[in-house]
Length: 347
Image 1 (spheres, one colour):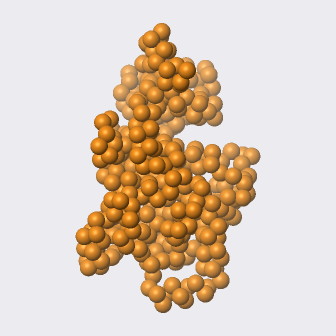
Image 2 (cartoon, rainbow, N blue to C red):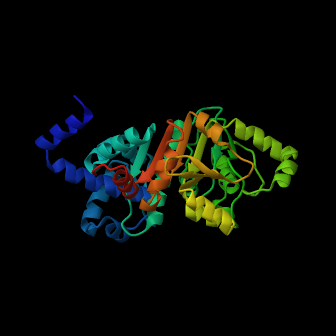
Image 3 (spheres, one colour):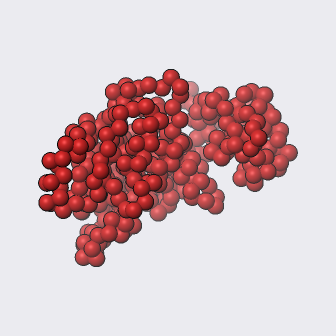
């Protein structure tokens, strides 16, 4: 009997299970994302009465799923464990299993994680995507891995959410997959890679170069011993974590000339990832000359995590996802609905 069939039979016998499960699972997940959080704020975010929140909170506390702190309720290790164990049931009740099947089959990717979209604040959605992405990264890590990271807000939230257990010593190396972009160092690959390396107690190899370089600058920098070490380490990447951007947004962020911008848009560019611009079919229409991971290297990887969300990213995700069949996508339900709409399937 399939798992879906098991859940269907459970609904027939105990129909009230679905409502109780969804309410408690969502509440515990909100505590994981926002905790420590007070009862009133949790009531507002969950759209539940304070009385219901108190009752479910006491239920969680009795089972060591949460702890009560001065600031409010906070997730406990047992709470994180139970959320992970019950994720499949949550996906079934939310209809995500059917969505995942459509996208995995149509895009030819290995797997995906779908998170609920926050009703009012996309940054909250990104935060939960980061939490799920961090859990996924922890599961995929193996001793000796060389981890490559790109920059961006989605990768930032993944790094911020990563929590290594005390006995976590996988002996990994970390390197930025590309040079820096823009003036805000908070979201740059170097900053994020260093931060994650500190959390993992791993070896950090910096890449102190701009994202866009001229031919002469490229030639000069490649002779620098520090840059050469980063280049060699990038070639050894075994696990890549990257974000996916809209072509028009990223072209402007990279300060491309109006001529180049118009050429890229005229070529049908819809996506940008690790310095490459792709059209809707996943073909490269422009490449930023820089020091970093090559598309050929990306295509050879066995482990990739792409993290991006929002309905406006749907076309970009479709374009980039076809690069490597080993890709695991972390996104949100609104983006998934848009992807399925573009693919011509009913949600």
